[in-house]
Image (cartoon, rainbow, N blue to C red; front, side):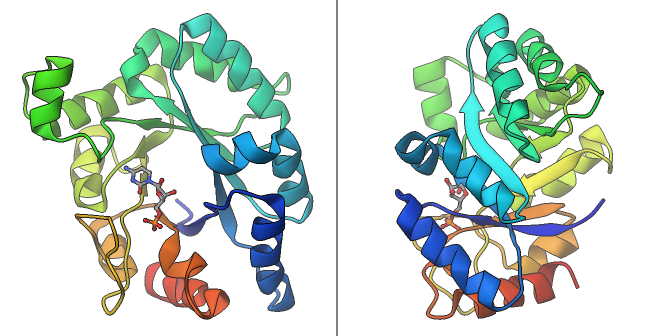
Length: 234
Ligand code: C5P
């Protein structure tokens, strides 16, 4: 499994994301980038094409969740954008995840990686019980959803780096873990609660770390990115 650092490009305009990426061009680096809802809804599919044309791998983080037929057709559209990785909510059921994979698969059999969100890390066990009437412990629910994703044929899950080891135990080492919540040992935690350094995430077996503000808000984003790569990949 190729470990990599994915830079969360949480910007709201093309101008902001392009001036950020220009800094990397000047240093000869082309990071794997995550495009989320904010940028996608602001700029549309064109922004994906333009960033792809610059030679970046793209994780399109739109977290689809709808009836299987709608998700299948939407995934076919995302696949045509030539993204490298995309995602959905495992809560949409195994049938929805299977339909998503079908939609994502191109006529030549290739497809982007498909990753499931289990329970959002912003959902507490208490809220899950009171709002969603799910009465099992949250770690059991996360592993169950990960297992469903595996049964549906998906490639992996987005999870906390703290859950990555357990996901691999449950679903196998080849099942990919994509983990946000990464901070440098000497950096600001911000609004993340349970964090790990890139080196710790590597040790616990994360396959991809998703890093936003420690890179995007750094005085020298390219140096911060290089530090992540040095700790996590090299
Ligand atoms: O700036 P920061 O490093 O906290 O960014 C983390 C990125 O990962 C953001 O784009 C955030 O939306 C995303 N994310 C997360 N926690 C999850 C799922 C996604 O932080 N459970």
